[in-house]
Image (cartoon, rainbow, N blue to C red):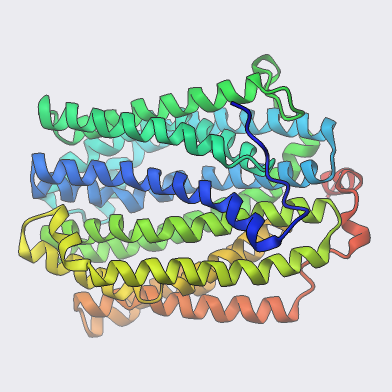
Length: 461
C-alpha cells in the first residue's frame, strides 16, 4: 500500500492541517486507549488498590520520559525544516542522528527509571498500601524505554515529512496487542499490575519494530540505514538546541503534575483511584489538542523551511480555531456523560465522586489549554523552543508549585487543589498572547529560504 505524504506548504491551510491531524488524533486516541486499558482492566480484575497503584505512577513516568520525548521533538522540527527546504543530504544526517539520540536516551532512561522509581514514589508520599505495587509497575515499565523512544523518534520523522498515517497504523496494531495481552496477563493469568506492565512493554517493542522496518524500507530521502546510525555533529546540535528546551518543558509540566499527584495522595487511596480514572478520561480530549499542536509544529517547520512566512502566520490562526472547536466540543460531551464514564472505571461511588470532580475542573477549560499547546507547537516549529519552556516554567509549573505549597494549606480541600489546573492555563495563555504580540518570533523570508545555509552558523554558536 502506497502512503501519500501531506505537503503542508501548499493547498487549503485548514484542510491540510485537518487531513494531517486526523491520523495523529487517531494515533493519540489509540495511545490513550491502551493506557486506559491498563487502568480499566486492572481496576476490574485486580481491585481498587491495584488501580490506584497504576494511577499513582502516571505523573512520575511522564516526567522521566518527557525530557527524552522532547529530544524527539527537536529532531522532528529539523527534519520538517530540511524536508521543506529539500535538503536531502541534511535529511539523511538528521534521520541517523535522531536514531542515535533515541538509542542512547533509551538506555539512560531505562537505568535511571529503574533506580529512581521507588525513591521518587516515596518522595511523592504515595500511600503505603499501594507503594510496593506502584514501584513494581514502574520498574518493569522503564525496561521498555528503548523501544518506546525508538517508536516516538521514528514516528516523529514520518510525521515531519507529511506521513501521519503509518504511525497510526503501527500504533493500531500495538494498541490491539496491548489490550489483548492485558486481558490475558491480568484477567486470565492473574499477574496483577505486573502483567499490565509487561503487556505495555511487548506492545511497545512491536510498534518500534514496525516503524524501524518502515523507515529502513522506504525509497525516499529520509530512508534509515541501520548500519549508518550515528550522531552527526552539526545537525545533531541543531536538533538538541530545539529538543533540550522542549524536553525541559515536558519535564516542567510533568513535574508540576507530580506535585499535584503528591497532593492528591494526601487525600487517600480512593482519591488517587478517582484522580487516575479522570486522567484517563480527559486524556481522550487531550489527544485532539495534541494532534493539532503536532500538526502546527510540522506545518511551521515545513513552511519556514520553504520560506512561506505569511502562510505560516495564517496557519497559526486557523489552528487555534480548529483546536477550540474540537477540544471544546469533545470536552463538553464528556462532561455531559461524566457519571456513567466514572462508573465504567470503578463501581465504588466514592471513587466516582472524585473522578467527576476532577473532570469538572479540567474539562470545562480544556480548550484554553489547547490554544496554549498550539502556541507552543508553532514556536517549536519556528525553532523558538526556549520560549515555551520559559512560559511553562513560570506560568504553569511555577504557579502550580505556589498554589500547592503556598495557597492550598489555607484551604486544604480537594476542589480547591484542582483550581491549580485552570488558573495556570489562564496565566499561560496571557503570557503567550503578550509574547506573540510583542516579539519578532518568525524569521523574515530571506532568513528562512535556505535553512542549510544557517546550519553552519548555528552549529558554531
